[in-house]
Image (tube, rainbow, N blue to C red; front, side, top):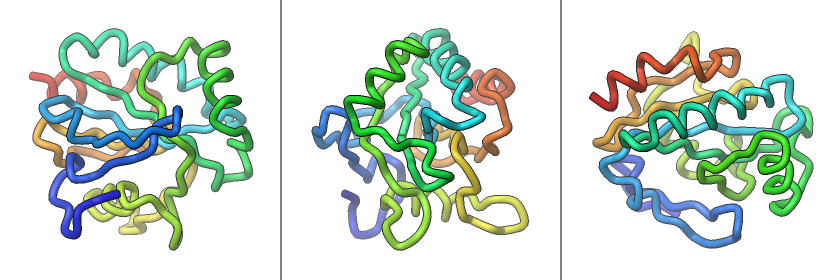
Length: 165
């Protein structure tokens, strides 16, 4: 899933929503917005804003990556097919989606362990607090900034513009 000593986001791979391994190296040279998502969360309407960012900035090099997570209040109970159908029918999501992952604890996906090490949370607490935590990653594969679940996608457009410049 990752190299022994990851230096950038490009050193990781993850299983996509279709069950296929996907190397994040495929996104080398792109700006990434990596988000843990859920379909039954109070922040779920942020899918609209995430999709808007993807469509608006995708041609300039932004890729939004969604990682469903069921660690917070059992808010992502569905399997891959249910998640795909929900995202497609409710929010017309077209950005890359991955298989369900854990973002905290011993079972946390290596990518999420690395993201948290690179940009810790408030008061130095690295744990992901809730769904829709976002990480902005530069073209070089380094984490630029971490955003709280309450930070609406549209509120980070300026940081995305700067990263794309």
